[in-house]
Image (cartoon, rainbow, N blue to C red):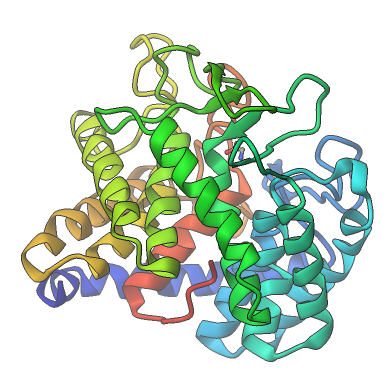
Length: 380
Ligand code: GLY
């Protein structure tokens, strides 16, 4: 691992420098915003926008999350101030019960949760505990899963993305000493591992369970190419990173094994396409949609797997992460000052929101390079 990092040290250092330069600029320019994407190069603003990209939008933790990573790495107060502004703005979403869904981890663990863990801010701790209580409240006891969305008819929907929300629950148990949050998180992770992860390492996006019994009903998708056989690449990334995070927080070997299994599938699925994921690994070649954000998410998970496995296994995962990140940097990053976002060509869903900058693309790209630089605060 050390040798590989040394081999890429120049790239890691120069990329980190570019990140720091760009974020020093945008943290100032967007100090009263929570961006989702850019318009003509300028960050948009979910604090002032209309639905769906308004203050309740699920991605609103990523911008303050980037700010906290940058603050932790540099100590520059400008990052802290911008993060705090976003965290305060998010209070309007935390008190809006009908708009809250399972994305509480994305929204608060990266904003208030990071604030509390880095600065000890008690108000931030309170916000994150409220978020954890709301997430725990979505647990379906008899079904053994956390409910995803609020639509009528979706009572039994559990989606792979939620593996990234449950670190909030592990934190809540660690913080309060009450095991119930962790119990819920592990019940959900077990249900996901036993049902979403297919024998070949690919994963379903959505599973609908009977909300009374937890029995499987069907496997739809809203972001992949096709429901039954689809392999939406960001969903594979959520599983890959999500399971290794559950392993880190619990030590349960099966979660590490699940993460590795999805990683093996992911790595083989991108090898032929220059290490940049298609939006869905099981879609026709035309139209050719890529999703750079899926690559950035997976890279973060691969780096964590590399840290967790024995010495002679590490290289496979770390090299794959570096292959993805260098490919993204070479062909899909914009380092100019005219464009506020870094990572281009993210895709919201198959056939919708194609090849655009999306805030979580920047978040995971930055988080991955931050990990390679050796910064040790795990924001999840
Ligand atoms: N969590 C929704 C998405 O990945 O687009």
